[in-house]
Length: 284
Image 1 (cartoon, one colour):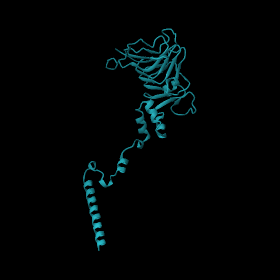
Image 2 (cartoon, one colour; image 1 turned 90 degrees about the vertical axis):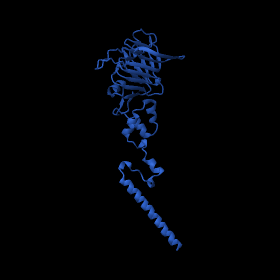
Image 3 (cartoon, helix red, strand yellow; image 1 turned 180 degrees about the vertical axis):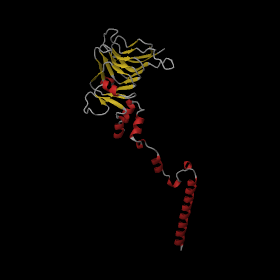
Image 4 (cartoon, helix red, strand yellow; image 1 turned 60 degrees about the vertical axis):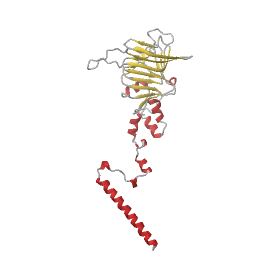
């Protein structure tokens, strides 16, 4: 008898629980969709964590778009160390192009045998990663679109750009660009020729002849003039050069300007074998 009453009371309790749940669901459905919430009986730590959007649940296109906002080195380089998928996406040709002196597969997308071909194929805003080891030829290469050129080695000495005799410069910049972790050597001309745009040189080595003629060998030459005019006839003064952690060796002088830019905020660290420079070239 006692057992029968216990069973009946248990069934009545379960029935009351079902009625309460039905009432909760009915009240929930009667509200607008944007006000509805997950019933308490369905919520648990495991389900709430599964509802949160993990970054690996994003598709490849979304992840690559996120990676595109990272600086190529070291941030985007470090993302490639996370897993095989991130390695594939971080090194995808859509994010940066590569220059390899010896290409195993000529049809591999995003890989080029020279800097000149990579610059010609690049889209505005692309990053070109130049492989470490060996020397890359660079003579009078004009860069007319925003690009970022980065050496693939741990140190700038591991990736060298050689400007041959007879060339005015190794690289000629006519747009906003960045140069990082590279060594640029010029025999008689200048290493970098800045025409217009904002040029950033970070962690590089610029080398010229030790005892050259004054007008033939200067690591950085700027000819930016104040003739850039907008449609509203207002002059645009956004051109400039920013140099940081850069070693400059040889040449008649480190910088030569024939336009309206002047040297500002100069800082030098003297070492036994070299000088490391920080400075800006802007309009006063």
